[in-house]
Structure formats: structure tokens, C-alpha cells
Length: 143
Image 1 (cartoon, one colour):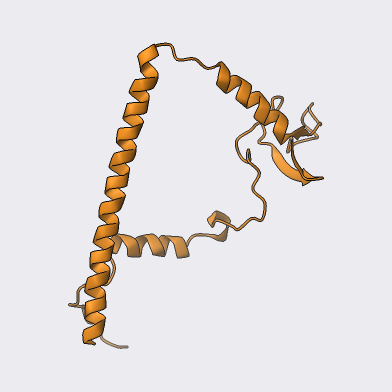
Image 2 (cartoon, rainbow, N blue to C red; image 1 turned 30 degrees about the horizontal axis):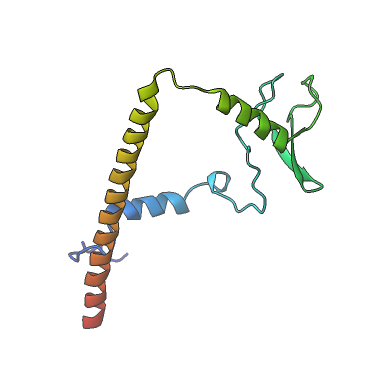
């Protein structure tokens, strides 16, 4: 068997990135994100009123229909159109009113501040990555 030598070089990528990639490539297939051709709007969000099962979605004649995943154990055996659920949600959302007039302005200001902090952090991250890329490009040129 060969000898193990401890590396003395500067790592090309941060340890956290290496660990994240290792987790992603060793993840079981059942947990891996899969490419899907169709993406129903309410997938994983709407439950059956009778049995609380998540609706499964299928497309027929250009429209999405949700149905209960447990038809034998459920009293609701009908399909429901995505547009009907969307219209009901819009009615409920429009009925929401702020209990205090200043609450919406306060929430909006807080969200905007949070978004600005997130953007600043992302821009700083991009700047660090560009600087690192510049350093690595310089190293490559010397090789």
C-alpha cells in the first residue's frame, strides 16, 4: 500500500463548498431533484377537504385537474380544476384586510430592508468570487 502525504497547498475551493457537493452527489436518488416537463401551480400545496391527502395533478385537454390520491378511502371522488382553486384563493386573499393602517407600511419597509441586505450580501459574494477567479486565473497563467 502507498504512503499518505498531507497536502501543503492552498485549497482551490472552500471546504464548505466541497462538503456541499459531496452531500449532493451522495444523496439517494429518491431525494434528488428530478426534471419534470410539467409543473402544476398548486403541486404539494392543496389538500383534500375530506381526507387531508395532498391532491395529485394531471392535465386533460389543456387544463390541470386535481384529485384526491386516496379515492377508495375518501368521499370526494371528483376532479377540481386548477382555475377554480385559483379563483377561490384570490377571493380569500382579497378579503384580507390589515388590522392596523400602519402595519402594511411597516411590513413593506421591513421587507425592503431585508431584500436590500440580501442583495448587498449577494453582491459582496459575487465580488469575492470574481476576486478568487482572478487569483486562480493568475495561477493558471504561471503554470
